[in-house]
Image (cartoon, rainbow, N blue to C red; front, top):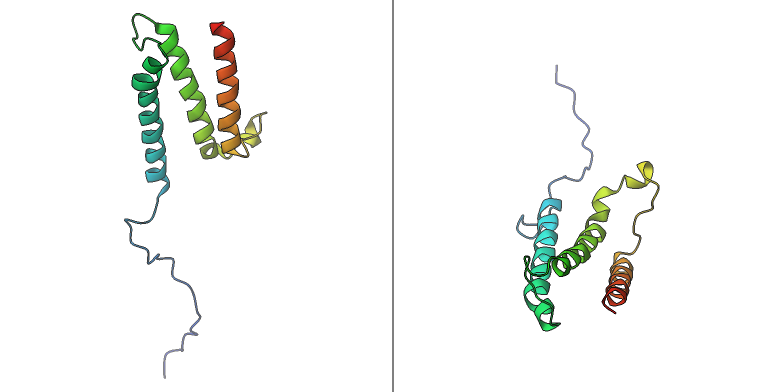
Length: 119
């Protein structure tokens, strides 16, 4: 007696033929975003603040440094908002639909508040 013949069906393999070096995993993408925010905030701290005539020293002008990093906290929140995709189910605030618009609104609002506070 012969064993039953298995029916062959076409199934796609779950293995991706793309080399691992070119695939972007969520961890790599998240680490790259963290590094980008960190580098840009440091450029702002060491280059932009002195160019604006503001001292970039923690001890002599802590408010300037605090406001600078408050801005970057807002940028980080907007950047990493999609990682919290389940937030609308548990929170009362909707997610940012368009992050570019959110960056622009945050920057303009922050700049307006900073200008108001300095004059």
